[in-house]
Image (cartoon, rainbow, N blue to C red; front, side, top):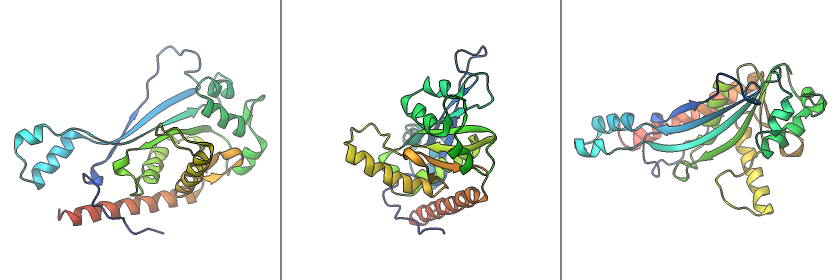
Length: 241
C-alpha cells in the first residue's frame, strides 16, 4: 500500500534528481579473497551539473552562483557479495572482512562445511546462488524522514543481486554514534521495521533476510518506488515546477 508523501519543506533539492553511483574495484590478479568477496560502495547523490542545469531552468540564479553549485550527498551504503562457488571457503572470506559480516556468516552458513545452514536453506525459495550482505547504510540527516532508505536500498539490491539467493543484513545504527546497549536494541528494532518495507524478514540472532526469488520482493520495491514518485511530485508541486 502506497503511503502519503511527507511534507517536503525540509528538502533542499528535488529528490527526483538523486542518482545511485556504484563503485567496485578489484585487481586483475586476485589477492587473498578477491575472487570470493565483491565489495560494492553505492553513493546516493545529486550531481552538481544536473542540479545546476535544473536551477538554471527554474530559477533566476546568475552564472556565478550556478558555477558554485556542488554535489549534494544523500547517503551511502556498502554491500558485500559472497560467491558461494568461488575458489575460497565462503566463511573464511567473510571472516577476513569485518566482524559484522563474519557474524552474519555464522548465522546463515554451516561454518565448517561452507554451505548454507539448514535453517537458512529451509527459509529460502530457491537456495542456489550467491549471498548479498547489506553491510552499512547511512542516510544524511537532511534526507531522513522521507522514506528514502527503503527505496534506495531496494533499488541497489535489485541491481546487485542477480544470481543471489538472498540479501541479508543485521539492522543497526551505522552513522558513527556511540550507542548504549539499550539504544542499539532500539535502533535495531526500528531499522528492522524499515527494511521489512522492501521484504526483509527477521531471522535468528538479529539477522534479517530478503529472499531474492519471491514476487513479494518485487512487489514491495514497486510500492516503495510509487512512494518515491509521490514524494517527487509533492516537492515539485510545492515549488510549482
